[in-house]
Image (cartoon, rainbow over all chains, first blue to last red; front, side):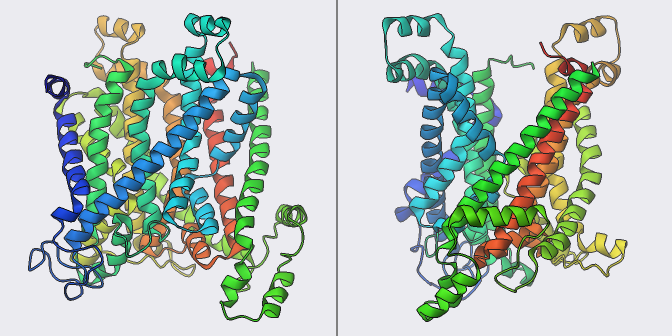
Length: 277
Length: 319
């Protein structure tokens, strides 16, 4: 408890707001089946029932309860983003550390490949790959994970390069420790803080990419609720004056703002800047 | 000194060409995975095996991959991107028309976004930690964090549906006059401007603020110069290089970021073209459009490096 209050005291106002927003959505995501009034695929009423009437946020383009789909969407979209970001960090950090620790040809080889791959814009790359391999949830995770592993590789490599020249790494090398030991016992603990801050930043990017992809029809497939796809599905309503598509879009915006507010503080701490700067 | 500069620029150019080559290879490989069942996808499940085979032969899908890549590369260098599978029209012609529209969108946006972004950044740096700074920062944080389609739909709901001032669908055509074009594309331009201004403003502010701790700024302060003079005369010249980078990178972002915006406003640009092609599994169009996007990206990144070197004399010399 003392640990928790310590963290709370450490946050400034904007970070506290951020934490509040993230906790709010996380609660809905975790307890979705208990909090949602209906299931995510159940048709409960007419098309585009008005907001704040019988149904709190009205119904969507085929008459499903929008609030329930928002709650389940929080769960699906956030879970997908967390898993994809974790995949990209595991792959990117391992390869980045390998490149930095082994150096020479391995480093050259990996870095050049990443240089080429990274110059294909993220959205375009995922559009091409997903149209080729389909949009099963597992492929979605893998594709996004691999695409975002590239920038993570660069950061992990740069961070590990700085650590790799330290005396204690040299000492471990002279002791005859292997690659895995150097990476996991010498470099990883010291690279944790910058990488953790980066995780938050990347999570936002991944979250927005998933939103854009599902908006374009290449994300989670129906009937699974997904915020981006919900915006697109309800989009036609806007011409008739229905505000329904704005609600899931606003949820995406609100959650990313919340994460950003929280992360800003975290990055600020990690970079060791003074508060007055 | 100029030789050093020329050297670096030349190296960047060679690397750019090398990267483009790699990108084209990657795109072909990616599209290759698609090619397998494009004929059955096009002709439907019930198609006769012989029809499918004929279709594959016609598209040259029976050749080994490296042969196809070679053919494609040779044709592309000659400006021939093949014909669309969906409507049998020349891909190059389609891309040409759409590219013009997308460049118009990006160009108009840049015209508004670049001056506004830099100006706001300087103002925020000048009055940092004041109410103005907080307001600008909070607004830009929101626009950066929200997905493009959120802003797009909000603007559409306000200006097209509620107020009825602007059209919700940006169906530009070549017969329109400049003013008509501007009116029809006002909403996508406004959305893109909001997003890019936010990025540029934040980076401008950050690069100026990060300089303010330098000894020479301290010196200027101790000499009793006004804050405005310190920022404009002393900090800004040193911040140009990162600012130029941000501006050009934002242009790169804009070329790609238009994908979602174009879909929202049904704007006939390159982004809408690639999304349609992906949904129709129209290989030559995907390949061609992706190549154009990647080229724009690579060229602009290169430009960002070169320009920031030109703006910063210290970068011209190797240490």
